[in-house]
Length: 291
Ligand code: UTP
Image (cartoon, rainbow, N blue to C red; front, side, top):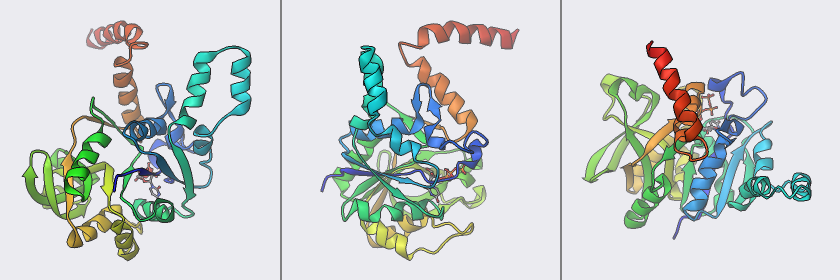
């Protein structure tokens, strides 16, 4: 069965980006000129995903508004014949069908995914963590879906991370089956560097079979009282094959101010409408820093 549904858990508190996220959802902070969440929705839509289940929470309804029509704004832009702005305003609502579900209490990423169970139904789906923006000519979604199509099994995206940083990731244990691909035998959430089974850390793209929901029902809250998605996938791996795919591309974590800043500069440098003005300014800045 083809993957046609995505789940985007976006109900978290965004504490690493306070105070900006006190009243504004982290996912609505602009990365250059659009809310960061729009990039993952665009990545999904471009790969043929038709339905997006947004997991939201109290105070985050601006995300839903962003992917909705805005009749008054559109009418005002139409009256001014501002076709360029009109296109930008309409685009988010045209990307995919957006369904939103509320996570009433923030009981963790695994719990957020479980909240989407009814909306997803019994079919494979892809989970996006909207903090992880991945750039590559062949999108991470395309790469993951092609592994899923070949193996007909769950696939988690992994990155080779420096050993001293493994304690920020879920880390996989497994055997390599082909270039960039591992058969997962186990997973450890945030291990100490000397206890990590590998340096392959899980990042924000997961193609999952619907049986993961049964696993999510079974796992108990972990150390900080949250239901971890990693624990459920580790449980799933005991009853069916699960793979880890080392994606190609550059990943930015836009869930922190520093990551957002880096992503903004590097991604602006890829844009024809921004780079010409940015490059001389950055060069002058570099000279000032060196001098
Ligand atoms: P994070 O661990 O990044 O948490 O969640 P957070 O709240 O977004 O940010 P910080 O750490 O406080 O700064 C990973 C993903 O899981 C979602 C988040 O929205 C984010 O996309 N999440 C987390 C939920 O949807 N619900 C939860 O209960 C926890």
